Length: 121
Image 1 (spheres, helix red, strand yellow):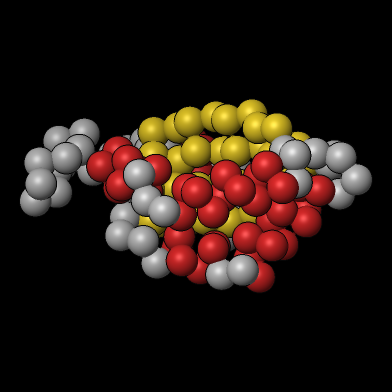
Image 2 (cartoon, rainbow, N blue to C red):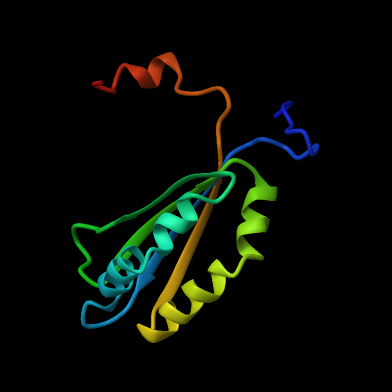
């Protein structure tokens, strides 16, 4: 946690998992429209975005998981203040989605030797 960018903002990466849940396939329709409307590609092009990707949970057809990662809090704050958030909010309301949010900070130490024993690359 000692690193900082040229603006003096901590470089610890932030990952936000957002579970969008709806009815009648609306969560998946939301994610599909986010992609087809170009919103996802626009977000990925924003300064500081590391990852913006949707996943479908195997046991819940009415939920979509978004993994949204940013270089630091400043990048995430700029994203939240951008016009992109209005687009996301309008689509979320269009599909009447509810959200559960989890927030994680990166572990700068990486994967330990003990954990690596369980990973096949």
